[in-house]
Amino acid sequence: MGIYADNACTTFPKPPCVVEAMTRFMTEGGYNVNRGSYGGAFDAEDGVLECRELLCELLGGPDPSDVVFTRCITESLNLVLKGLLTPGDHVVVSSMEHNAVMRPLTQLAQRGVTFTRIACAADGSLDPVDVVQALTPATRIVVMTHASNVCGTMLPLAEVGALCQERHIAFMVDSAQTAGFVPTRMDELHADALCFTGHKGLLGPQGIGGVVLSPELAATLEPLVVGGTGSVSDSEETPCFMPDRFEAGTLNLPGIMGLRASLLWLREQGINAIRAHELALTQRFLDGLFPLEEDGLVRIVGRRDTTNRTGVVSVCTPLLDEAEVARRLDVDFGIQTRVGLHCAPSAHKTLGTFPVGTIRFSFGFAGTEADVDAVLTALRKICSQLNHPID
Image (cartoon, rainbow, N blue to C red; front, side, top):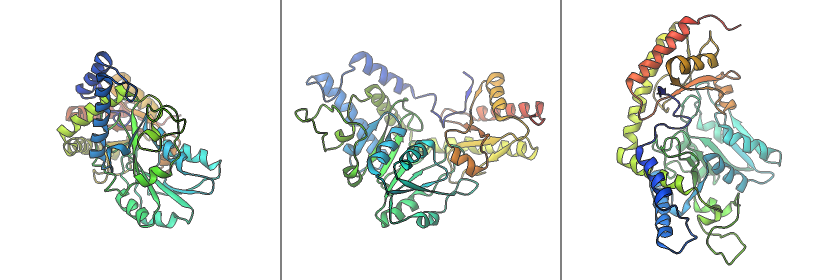
């Protein structure tokens, strides 16, 4: 299949145990939960509970019942923002946020919610002091990404969370680019909500995500969706207890079983070992990009080392159209990347790459040094052959 360098979008390949767990569930007992009084249904409930327990353990949640499953991290972010905010409330975000945060806030702004966007530095970094200066008496919540999906720069969320905690302001973390790759714990980040997705660093399937909520924040949220939960079925009122309060309808059980398998695999392998491998590949890639940059063929966007970053690297090709370079990488060399604005126009404005965007490379746990070297060779060939300005 060539070289896959788009793990920031979705990780590939998945550990074989993920596919096996999903297949086994759907072929040997695809029962529902909370809706059957027989052995198979109870086994499914046990699997869901174990997945909550594994997530709580990994992400530093208060209790497994505080883990709420959604179909994706975007839904998790919407669940908290729309369940908490009312006209007159104020929100603080960074300029590196994904549209999963900015589009709900833009929608809520039409209903009287305001937000302040803190300007990050040109490498995507943020000064926690700027957060304090952005707070107002109406600030209800601070929402920030743990790491940029464009350039990999990590934000100082532990410091931001502590500032919020001191001021009794809710703090929500978007961990899309870090959970499973970087130690990401709700307790250490002083977060009231930690939103996660299954299909990136957690190495699970698409279509499953969630949020870990503090009991205090959960008690203040209005559910985004209400309906049948299989519990308290004698009442037409939404259950007040967790996690049923926020899990109306049938859960993505194949996805949860796949996620449970990937979490067990991650625990066995060790996140720190995976992180060390991916950052070693990232450093090798950066080292290989420096000569290309000196020759004027590429420009590295964001941080230029592996300090306070993930394994996401974006580049511009000053003499060439980025989309054409990405197409050539795919068609001529079998190298799969992500080109454009990555659903994060605010981040690209911060990094100085709007409106064209960048070519983004992200190597995963299955990547090799040979993969990195092949990408660098292909980049040099393409840029050397076509090194003339785009008309």
